[in-house]
Length: 192
Ligand code: ADP
Ligand code: MG
Image (cartoon, rainbow, N blue to C red; front, side, top):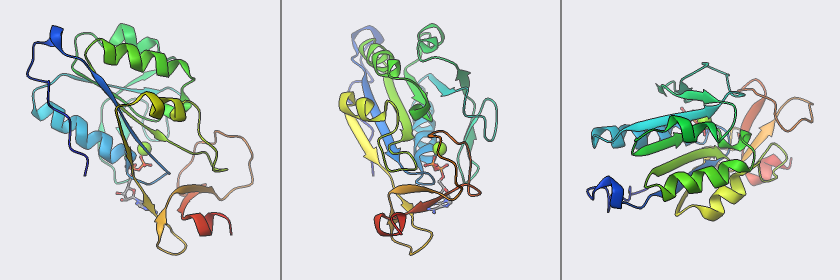
């Protein structure tokens, strides 16, 4: 269980340092659930929260971020990571879902937000359907203070799943889809 680092949140906003948390894992591993859990707890602590996602991810809803068990929270869809700078305002916590779809400039922007005193919580797929690192995620993990890797259940054997197995014969890195196109698999069953 991730213990939220609340250590400096009672200091004056101006004096705080921020930090970056990354939540990564395969599809269906509970990244969005965990992101929503942390954001809800921040709201309970009376912190102002802003949530963003890339416009490319419109699978369930144009604006909300939605988990596979149907919990959801309102978010602002953005084209480019730099859009966040104009939109964060004076919030305490910035949530970002599906960060793998952003380009590498998200790393610089996340650093800027953290340096301005914000807690930045970023969820994203660490690997694509081939098992290769996905987009900016490796670099985000490199600069993050905290990394949580969550796991799905392998739908073939029930073991711990680390991979997003694509069931359809399309080779593009980005194919938006759900259980129709992907399933969670463990290392052994991913290579079957
Ligand atoms: P992610 O954002 O990582 O894709 P979500 O947070 O949206 O994951 O969804 C996690 C939920 O997905 C689980 O709580 C569970 O209800 C559901 N789920 C569906 N298939 C699986 C699976 N193979 N392993 C684990 N959870 C699954
Ligand atoms: Mg998700």
